[in-house]
Length: 117
Image (tube, rainbow, N blue to C red; front, side, top):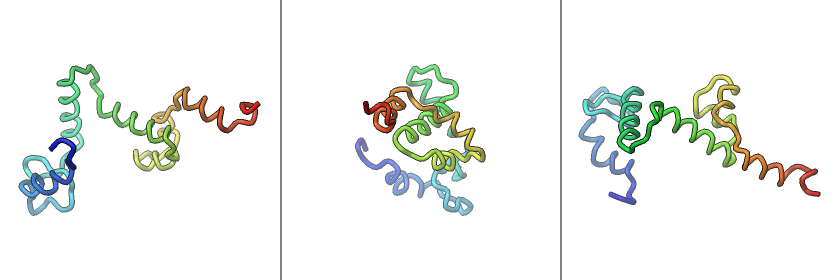
């Protein structure tokens, strides 16, 4: 299925075999037809990271931080990133979205009046 739509494959071929009466609209289900829980996802990601030979014990947080940072650096308003991450306070989101020095220099060069002379 390389190059295919994995989510659509899951919806068409895998999820129907897992559905139970109590499943509802939950997208991802475990092998018992129960909503995939956070700790299961964390364990799955940790296993994949270890198999890849990486020494990153908090891989889910690393991916979360990377996604938030990349979204912000590519133009996402910090308030949207805040909502996506579920943060009540914007200062929490700002920790996740540190601005890369390269991007900061680019923005400065493009927008600051002193940089244009």
